[in-house]
Image (cartoon, rainbow, N blue to C red; front, side, top):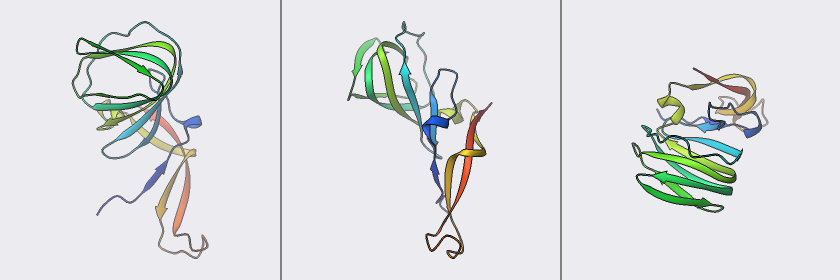
Length: 148
């Protein structure tokens, strides 16, 4: 049976990763994360990941150093970092971007978003439509936290 649940995560209350990223909605095969107003930095050490990343720049500028190439990322640009590619980012101007990873980056680091009550919102189809005036969904308020 296919998963028919809907997940909503409010970025104001999203769990943060070690690099400052906020973990947003996550499905079985893809997840989102948000880099908000990251300050200029020197390039971090190159790394490779066991997931593919696609991203979109909302504001600011950064350099993506990938496989001996330099890619300038500016407002409105999107990019791809293939699975296993050696890469590093250098933030040039305060930077805001959203990324999607597949498979979910959190899963590859054995991190899970756990519901604790109050922050995210997950809608599930319900059996009876009478209690919610025929809308057909039950809302469950949830707070997300990163668990190692």
